[in-house]
Length: 371
Ligand SMILES: Cc1ncc(COP(=O)(O)O)c(C=O)c1O
Image 1: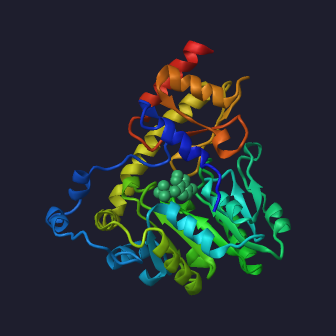
Image 2: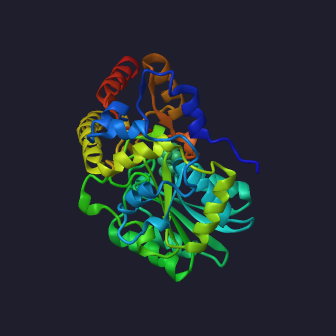
């Protein structure tokens, strides 16, 4: 397989660990091993007893059970664990798709959600979101672009990079369109549980539709990206079996230590999510004030969920140049929209980290120094 470079990941690889402030990370503030062990009595003793052999290929049964509790109608046998959401997406695409299949992908998007399909030789229709329309999705576009060869619709709610979350009736219409046309719905739900208003949280696709495939991960809402634990939940037995077989050619099984910590974190998930939502809430208030103050520089659409947003730069300068100048002068990393193949006007900003206020201050200094 020949596949294009993953622009966003390459940009991170180049700068993320060299800069002082990453102001575009999508994951929430992480936890130390000590903090995780503090969540439960006896956890240190349990950790000492973990053996480091191969683990069960589908995932530790206790972990699969904990993951299944995140859903309404999913059993642990309907969950398979991977090395991050990335492996889940890669395998799903490889198992489901063949050359000339058609996909409709919500766009802008995390690159693997369409690039793997491109590499397989599929025809990808981008279902483009626009800030002029407050990022709202055009259902009419979806309906008119479904054809006989459409194999899958790909959505990501809460959305990377805009923080968009559709209303429930819109989401139901998407599901119904997939159902009526007997099309798979790949639902990347890695930012689920970070809805600012819990009442707006969407049900998972795998709970609503036999061909709904939900992807989750410990990286984003739980702030545990270093565990590299993600999963697929689906009621589609045939797809499940094929995905499980393919895993024997990628990672075979997961890290025993990562599974141990993922179980611990999921058993204490409300504490973890609440801490992350508190950080987001306080950072988002600062961002709101900042973008109101500098509304001649930026167009700001406040997100509804998640730890990232996608403001537009209004001044007469390309975003790529703006971001590189900021990086050089203040050691602050923003993610230009060119890394999403989405023009040169937007940038991704992240607000799940504790040091965001400091990074924002640096951005403000940069504006005052230069414009
Ligand atoms: C929408 C989306 N899906 C999948 C992933 C991959 O997640 P992971 O790095 O945990 O495998 C990311 C990471 O940024 C993402 O934003």
